[in-house]
Length: 246
Image (cartoon, rainbow, N blue to C red):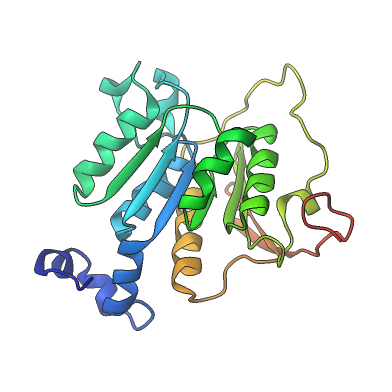
């Protein structure tokens, strides 16, 4: 569908980019991205996806907004405390762009609902904060054949990688210990860390959807925000991976 005049004005900075242009912007408007987690990572990822004109954004999170979230979860404000995170996020994203479609899932991802939900999307962003969910997302995306962005944050550090299931190194190839240690106390992160990593996840989604640039395939990008050092670590698929191995 051709862009209307308001859309041409809104996305004017995209339209002058050779890698996007009107054709690319129209493709973004037809794209669908599922963001699993509407917290620290999901906030910047969803914001920039909405700003970029992703036509349909799915938001999945079963939690409510807590005052301690506001130090890093920029989708929410003080008046959101006590509200469902997905409901608070819808208000903020529609204030940014009322024209995008937002599907809400006020519950956690499970193996059962993943089989129903993931087929509707073109890309998945893992913005969760626990190992169990990350392994589940990796398995669900592999089963559904959906590309996804993994990210993790802790204290002053962040990491992210992009996976095209069955073709690239997957999350399970690299991380083998399932389950977070019991009784672990959250340490950080500093609020700007998920801002950096979540923004990279949004950029990765845009690159994959438009088939531009070089996504973080077979690579783990790490960031130490205290030293502001980035490393891009080459990855190799595990032939014995229970998700994508032979």
